[in-house]
Structure formats: structure tokens, C-alpha cells
Image 1 (cartoon, helix red, strand yellow):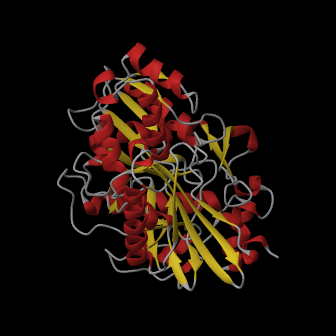
Image 2: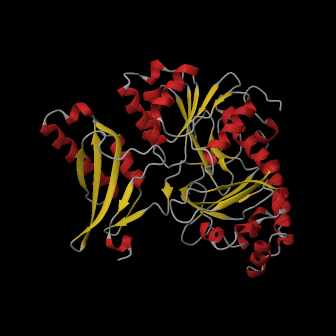
Length: 441
């Protein structure tokens, strides 16, 4: 693979809009033809009265119904295959945090294409063969670890496959081998700061870190900025999902003006999550993807339940691949309290802007009498916790009022001792719903 100074694959990254859409249509037609060999798609096309041979434009895909996780879960996952099972070299599955895990199959060509996409992402942000890349994501069925691992090796960087957890060991590896680039869950990055503190180390001066890739869970811009400031790194947002390939679907360039969707491999739509009608460019909606370069298990019009918008106009980096905003949250992460829709990220945004707040919080929903109640447990910094009670009360009142203005519901805010809330080393559990209707009582 030859690369110029700034682009891993300039032929694809610098395609003009007209050429890019022509390539999308060509690959879409090939994908649809491939799908006709799948038992699932044969039945899907018949039920929708959809003739894949008559697709003459990208817009024609709107005549096909969307699918989602429930579609994938409903039956034998091999019915989606468009190649013999003997041609499958790997399977991955989702975490199953919102229900039964979904399974995705890959051929050798799919693995190759995936590694190329993530290498494109990493190279775009400045990763080079001289870097030391510490991969702090889980390996195995979770796609995040292996997706970045193979891409970094493809670039030529030295890879430390640290995996998740074992925080003191992570820091030792960073220091012993002069790690320059990390891949980390944002909530774990905040937790790791506490471990640095316990060791009497400052990551800005005690490591050689310069780039952090953060993803796997929605997070606010304030959280990203905190990671950049406390670690002394450039932190880049990564977007992916197991059903598409894993990481590598969309990524920020150094301009950080949204995440470029690699449109030579994915057709992206932004739909109203209720009507499933296309929204205007710049309006928020649900991301829906169609794979364009997938051999073993193509997916058509897959509903992600991730809420975002497409940035209008072109990026200053010169790539015309459309850019999506940071993910506001998942439609299935949203909870309703007293008739108001609330996303956990709204709470996080307020807390991260409050001085004296620690790195961990939890939202507890419960039924008290006949009324729903929202409690927000917030760890505070050690020096404040050991300080005067009136200062804690002032902070609690300030957070309560700012949350009321943000979510339009007045929560019960409880300030708790640092380290008293569960600190997971994987995806953070931010919401605990104990309400009667949530338990199914």
C-alpha cells in the first residue's frame, strides 16, 4: 500500500462527489445481486415486492423496508449469508447490553477490507509506523479490539494488545514501552486518571501519549475535552457498530468537524425514527446504514438507533465523504421521566462542566409511592469532600438547578464520596431503572 503524506488511500479518500456516488451505486447493485443468494433476502425482497434488479439510483433503496437488531435476532443468523459457511473465517457478536447479542460473519476479504478502513482512519489522524499503539479495548467477540489491532499493524506501528482492565499494568506498559497512541473507552479514560493519581503520576508528563481514540459508548464534547486536557493528547471520536464491521464506519479527521462516513463502503441515511422518512440535511435523526463492500453478510438499510445529523457543506480537509455529528445517544438509551424524554448524555454534559465533580456518576430511576423519581449520584473531588459542608450544599444546589434547566425535570442530586460508585473497566453503566414498569411488575 502506497500512501501520500496525509492520506492512506488517496484514490478513495479524495474521490469527488459525483465519482463517489457512482461508485456507491455500482457497489450497491453488486451487493443486491449478492443478496439474492441469501434465504433471508429472497424472502425479504418478496415480502416487500422489491426487485433488486430494478434499482437505478441510490434513492431507490427507500422502497425496501428497514431492518434492525430484532430482524437479526429472529432466527438462524446463517440465513443472511451470501457465501457458503465454509468461506466464513470469523464471527463477532455485539455485547448484548440491550438484549440478545447479534452475530456478524466475515470472509477473509471482509476482514481485509475492515483492516483497510480502520488503517485509513488511524493514518488520517497522524498515526505512523514509528508509533507505539496500546490497544486498551476488549478482544474476542467484541469488534473494537481486533479492528484497531490489525489496522495498526498494517500501518506498521508497534502494537501492545493490552486488552481491557488491569489499570496499573496499563500505566506500566505505557511508561515501559513509551506508548504514543491509545484506544480507550472514554469513561475508562476518566477512571484511569484516578489510578494515575494514586500512583502519583501525571499522564501529561509521565507518558509519551499524543493521540487517543475514544469510542464504544456515547460521550459529550466536554468529556472529550477533559481527556485531551488531562492526558495532553489529541482525542478523536470513532464510530462503528458490530453489525457493519465494528470500528471504521466513521471517524474524525484532524479538522474535528464531524466524523467522515466512508461512503465507498457504506450508504448512510438519516431518518425520522418514528416515520422512517428521510430528514433534511443538518436535521437530527436515526442513522441507517447499507453495506456496500461486504462479502459474507451484507446488511441493507440497517437501523442503528443512534441519533445524529449530517453536517452540511464540505470539510476543510478536502474529503467529500459526508460527516455525521457526534452521536447524541441511542433512541433505546433514552428514558422517560414524568413525561419528559431524557438522554444520559444531557446529564453528563452538566456534570462535566461543574467544578468539583469527580469522574463517576449514576442515574437511578425509581417509583416512590405513585410517582417516578430521578436520583443523580455524583462523586465529588476528594478535597471538596473533605471540605466544608456548605460548599457541598452549594454544589448540590447548583447541579440540581442546571439539570432542571437541561432536562426539564428536577432530580434529587446526592453528592457521594470519591470511589464509592462502581467503577467498571468496560462500558460504563450510567442508568439503573428500578421503576415498577421497567421491572415488568
